[in-house]
Structures are given as C-alpha cells and as structure tokens.
Image (cartoon, rainbow, N blue to C red; front, top):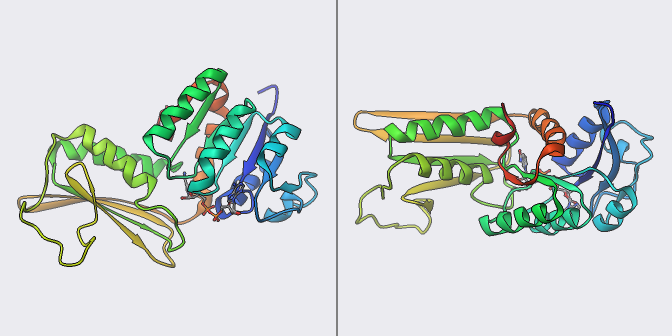
Length: 267
Ligand SMILES: NC(=O)c1ccc[n+]([C@@H]2O[C@H](COP(=O)([O-])OP(=O)(O)OC[C@H]3O[C@@H](n4cnc5c(N)ncnc54)[C@H](O)[C@@H]3O)[C@@H](O)[C@H]2O)c1
C-alpha cells in the first residue's frame, strides 16, 4: 500500500479501544491521528498502551477531533448509547466508520446505510470481529437446517450493558434464515419465574449469562430425538479481535454502503 490509512479511535481508553490503539500503532500501514474518549483524556494516546510520545492526545469531543484530524477511518468501541451518534458524526465528516460496539437496531443500520451511500463511502458494523465466532455462527446456521430445535446460551462479563449480545442476535438471524419457521417447546409452558425461558426470537430462546470472570462465550445447543449437538466458541483475550479490526480498516476503503457483519469481509 503506497499511502498510509489514517485512523481515529473512539473509546480509546476502554478495554477494546486500547487494543485498537496498540494495533494501529504497531501496523506500519496505519497511522493513528486521533483518539477520543469521554473519560480517559487528556493524555498521550500511547500512554494507554505503554507506547508513549505518539503526539496524539486523547480528546473528549468526537466532532472536534474529526474536524482537526480528518481521518480515513473511525474505529468505534464505545457503548450502545454513543455508537449511533458517533457513527452519524463520522459520516457527516466523510469518515468511514468501523464499529465494533453492539446494540444497533435494524432500523438504525438501514438509516446508516443510506447516510453512507449519500456520502459515497463505506462503513462496517460488526457485532463480532473474531473469525472463530463467525465460524460458530456459520456452523450453527448449517446445523439448523437439520436440527430445527435450538437454544442459544451466551456468556459475558457482568459489566456488559446490552443483552442479548450482538453475536447471539446475529446467530439467531442466520438460524432463522436456515430453518423452517418453528415455535418450539410445549405450547402450554408457563414461566414460574419471569424470564426463566430466556428471550424469545422467532420461535426459539436466547439466554444471557452475565458473570464476573467471564469474557465472551457462546453455545448453540441443538436438540433432536436421542441426541444433542453443541457448537461453542470461547474468546479468552481482546487481542483475538484485532486481526479482524485490522482487515476491516483496510477493506473499508474500497466499499460503499454500510456493511453489517465482518463475515462479508472474509474471503
Ligand atoms: N465487535 C466485537 O468483536 C466486540 C468485541 C468486544 C466488545 N465489543 C463491544 O465493544 C463495546 C466496548 O467494549 P469495552 O469492553 O471496550 O467497553 P469499555 O467500557 O471498556 O470501553 C468503552 C470506552 O468508551 C468510552 N466512551 C463512552 N462513550 C463515549 C463517547 N461518546 N465517545 C468516546 N468515548 C466514549 C468510555 O469512556 C470507555 O473508555 C461494547 O459495546 C462491547 O459489547 C465488541
């Protein structure tokens, strides 16, 4: 690549944001030009990841940072409330959003797709940047064709704000596309404790476990007469998402419209 891609990171002081800052600083094809966090500044962005003196100071106001730095790409790992306004701000400045923050509604994604196309640029919203997780979703969709009775159990740390996880919703969407419509379980079933059967999605259930000590796991359980099939993915480290974020930053330069799901960027 002849010219470096300039990158801003929103949520730079957060757990995922720090990994992104580190990844960008370590890739000679990328240049960090802005770091935004509403609660982590003002410090040199490099000090967040043990690489001081980058010359990029963490700032609090996204619009000001984008106006000053004019990056090619904004990577957003903030929170579900901030992600939509942040993404709209990026598009207003003609900056390509690569968003890992979860919690977008289909209506919001459609609206952002329109805004991307109006600007003639690309964007990505990816509930999961991990290749293993995407394979888990693909294998689940394959299995749903043969095993239509299914439940999803997802496990995350107790500080996660949205439930169910973006990955479980995406898995549920793929499963729904692959299987015949089916309302599972006993039609006379009653919940003795509200919520005991989990969240209802198109005939099946999603269960969200939130516990300290847990990072990110998901199990898709299929049941049939005399057998069960479990497809499980475990993430242990945030660094595992970074090859996906890196690929997205590079591929987004040649896309128009808002892409939903990192799987579209895999060969
Ligand atoms: N797509 C994926 O592969 C993937 C993987 C892990 C986590 N996530 C998601 O990424 C998001 C962030 O996760 P985390 O664990 O890093 O959270 P975190 O709480 O550690 O970090 C979020 C950071 O964003 C900052 N912030 C909040 N609002 C902001 C705003 N308006 N502008 C700039 N900064 C702002 C906070 O100060 C904080 O430092 C969550 O939605 C999580 O579910 C996605």
